[in-house]
Image 1 (cartoon, rainbow, N blue to C red):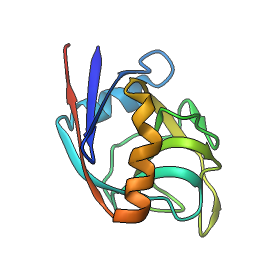
Image 2 (tube, rainbow, N blue to C red):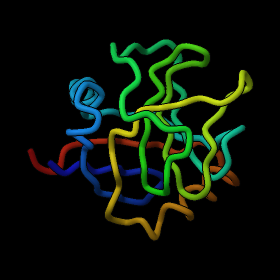
Image 3 (cartoon, one colour):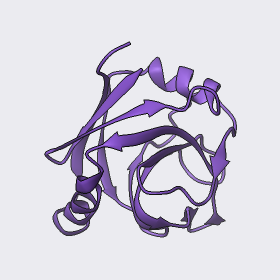
Length: 138
C-alpha cells in the first residue's frame, strides 16, 4: 500500500510498516486523508513535526525509536509530551523539554527523498507548511 505525503510544495511517497507497527498503521489509516501543518522541531535536530495536542490514536508504543532515520515517520502517541508526528530529514534524537522521547516508526518514505532536506529548511526559515497524508493505492 502506497501513501503520499504532500507538504510545503513537495510530494513524497512511501509505505506503511505493517508488520512492525500494525496497530499504529491501522489507527492512522482511520484518519486518512490526514491534514496538518508541519513546523521545524525544537529539541530533536533535523526533523519536522506536526503537533497534535491531545489527539488520541488509541495506541501504545510499538516499533518505537528515539533515533529515526531520514524518511522515517514516527507517531508519538502522547504521554510525557503531546501527541505528534515527526518526520526525520537528517540526524534526529527525538526529545522534548521533558527529555528523550520514543515514537512509533510506522511509515517509511521512499520517493522524493531528495526533497526532505529542502522541506526541512523551508519549515525552519519560512515557518509552518501545510501537509496532507493520503492513499495513492490500497
